[in-house]
Length: 166
Image 1 (cartoon, rainbow, N blue to C red):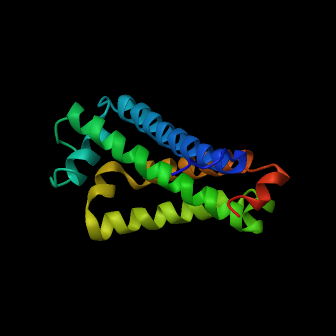
Image 2 (cartoon, rainbow, N blue to C red; image 1 turned 90 degrees about the horizontal axis):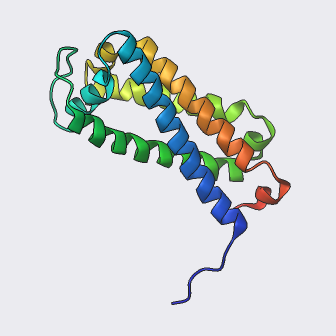
Image 3 (cartoon, rainbow, N blue to C red; image 1 turned 135 degrees about the horizontal axis):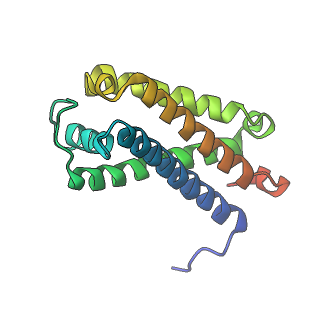
């Protein structure tokens, strides 16, 4: 089987998806590191998320910080944000509104993240958002939406990219 020929537009789209997801994941991780350190408990949030989501423990602010959970959850977090970046890149390549109105993509991404937050806090892991703090999670969602939206928009800014994935 012959390898696919080099495609600058396809490769650029993949790059945009990975880069936007990685930057959003890193931005959110650094935000929570700073917020947790300010409260005197660095790494509490990713450890709490990992222990709750991956181990099934009840969410509680007094769970001990586990660096293995920080590491494992960081991988899950990165993969989730790269997937979000891929969806954002694909949608932007297909919908002219997202290309022409730069604020629309971050607003849609924020809404998706907020709805995901609602699903997490009410259905999948009740009490998790309460322990982390709704304001902190909302701030992180806004930051992630802005980062993904900005990187995808910049990566797909050329007119050549309007026919992306055709």
